[in-house]
Amino acid sequence: MWVERIIAVTGWEPLNLDLPWDGIEEALGTSLPEDYKKLAEVFGRGEFSEFMRVLSVDSTGQFDLLHIWKAYLGDSPEDGPDPVLKPYQMYRPDRRGLIPWAFGEMECSYFWLASAEEDPASWPIVTRGNPYPLQQVRMSTSEFICRVLTDPEFEPFSIARLFPEPDFFPMD
Image 1 (cartoon, rainbow, N blue to C red):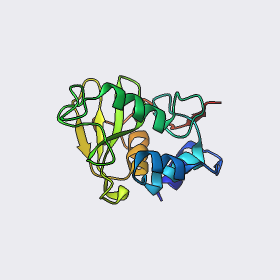
Image 2: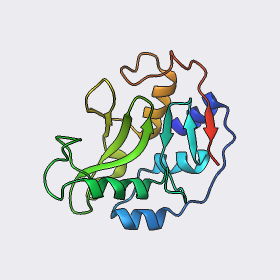
Image 3: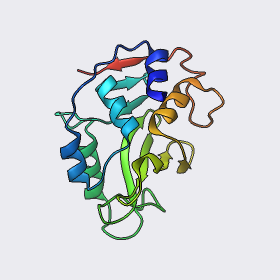
Image 4: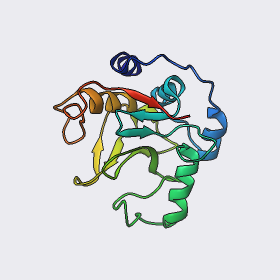
């Protein structure tokens, strides 16, 4: 439902990509939210309204979810909260933690607070951005993106007033 709304507001023609989720989920040690996978298959690599870049499968590594997660792991302590993301830590298959799924302008980062024991559809979103602190939001990935793009009352996340006509720019 939310992915279809994003398609409608951006005027995007769905790509319906076949992405290698099995290998990615095996490397992560958990499944990913279904609505996120559908979004990545429909849009591919790109940027929403010159603001938000959703990670996916990217052979260059620049916007590749698995590559970015591993880079965070390399900078993150094995035990305890990550100093940059305190009070959270990065996800590891044996414990709850953050998995990055998008980046935005103004130093914004978007994560799931993931656990292999929980249904990925129930994972909260954790946001980090300038000037607001880390915040937790309970909604699906695609609902969050749709509201960022279209809901001017969805503060402090919305860009609807800045970009009243949402769009998507593919990155080849």
